[in-house]
Length: 85
Image (cartoon, rainbow, N blue to C red; front, side, top):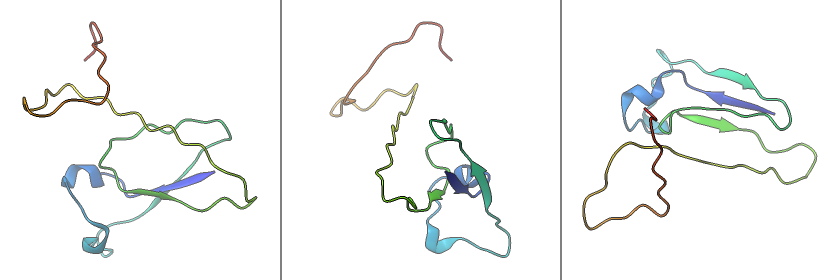
């Protein structure tokens, strides 16, 4: 499987696809072997093509954060990790 990313797009905060300046941006293809893992920042613009064998693709999306939410909001799941920075 391969995924296409726009390097450093996560540094632009919210960077909508319709606002991409293709004169200054470029795509990079990341090849991932079956069962492989791709780690990235959540705001990195990325995409992957449809499967070519008509089988389902499983994706596990996990986000880590060291931020507390405002009092009126709660994380769906929260696990405290010791000595994790």
